[in-house]
Image (tube, rainbow, N blue to C red):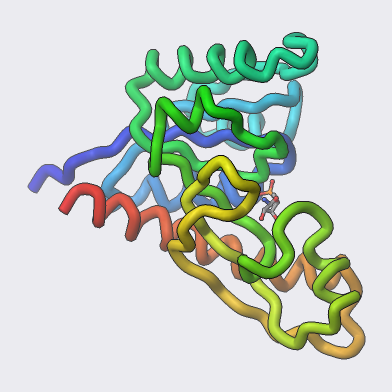
Length: 196
Ligand code: GRF
């Protein structure tokens, strides 16, 4: 039986460990989508090298070359996405806030992974904030991207326990291990739901 395939793009800015997990699951025969392009706003990052190993086309659209023209930067990304017929975008450590150009072209079609149990701790430095606040349960969230930062509808979450001797970096490691399981599973579910 031929599975219907959704064309997926990954946007990233750095290390790409979540992106790698998405690339891995997308290789399995029963995955209802294909990662057709990986785009970074930073040149020479590890995430781009990973994509090359998976033989996925990569692009760097360096925001610095747009001198604050956020719309122009996003418009260039959109033209690549259109060239590859992309239907779903996964942000995976993409460290830019999305403006209206991308969001208007892909409403409810952009997913993100965030390292906290939203709506707690939106924004940066989530593990520091979790420790400062003294929460005992922390985790990660996959959500749909909307104009508000880390505000869109939640698709799924995973939790970890915070222990007394956790540091921001030990907590980040624990959460990242959960992110690596959560994001591929949440993406797969989202695609299945889209296609049903
Ligand atoms: C992850 O913690 C993710 O939740 C956040 O940025 C980090 C990216 O890490 N949005 P990686 O590039 O996927 O390794």
